[in-house]
Image (tube, rainbow, N blue to C red; front, top):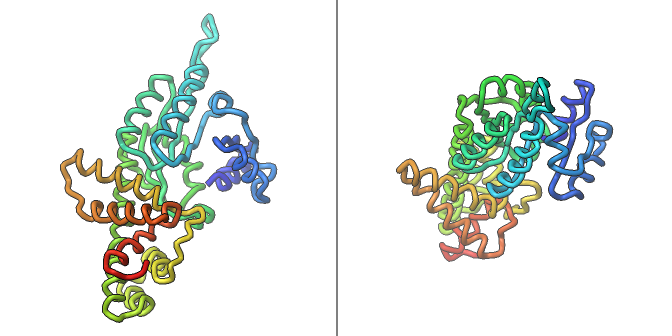
Length: 299
């Protein structure tokens, strides 16, 4: 995502300012051939907030998002203070958070941004690392219309489609949780079906040939193939730990809106069992291991 943003920013005659909580990751990113000359590191979040009028963030959980946004809000407040006399306030920045977090967190941070003179847009994304690299992400975008119009070309540089979900930033996070609910339910379906097939003498690859016929969809084939071949190395993909975080968020959303989600409950238990089996850092399709073991098969 940063590489594609840098490519667009460079077309405007500027460089992308970058910061990461892990400085080694910043250095590695800037060393990539596609990014050379297109990125400028900044030493701190405060510097980022003071230098940039549009800031994209991508973090792994709610606590990290709160910490980063609190620091950016402080910088935004400094930008919007009057310099004395009749001097106008500096323009507020636009904060664009692409993380998958609770709608409650987004409501809280959206209000905090408004209080410090900034605008807040939630823009979580759907897609694995290869989709991000190819700028083929699906993006869910919600927040103030003026902010969405300003960031539109930046957002378009990241993906194949942007779905606008109104002025309430939390709606984008709700939509992302819905998307992940469908994904984890699909993984659970494939896991149970493949296990039932295997228990009854039908091989995994034979089962997948059937699935490819009735559901000829790349994402279905991708997850099913990973299960069939035990290819659970996550790489830069979505891990069991992150899956547990997101399934917890969707279960909380279901509880708050009085909507039972039995599929999410079952998937959560299998993900938890997979984590207990030492698979926390594996692709979340590794919940299949828990399904197999529950059926008396080797994981």
